[in-house]
Length: 109
Figure (cartoon, helix red, strand yellow):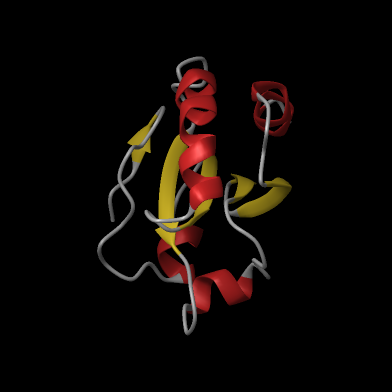
């Protein structure tokens, strides 16, 4: 699994399981979306800018879609969905962020 502290530009090629996510310790930002999603592309500059200030947060980009179990577990309905985790537990989420401020508030939990 490709986990990067700070901004992660690449979506995962392999399937990520709930067990993989639950093994991550500390602060994690899960980003559900797809490489071709317009809303996801629009959010990337915002995420990149904000994540530069949160280098201690692990950023995991998860390809979501039909038949993807991890997205269903987290009840993802729209892309991108950003979910903040602390030691494997959800502490907040933002759907289709349109400002850096929204993302900062999510990560400042």
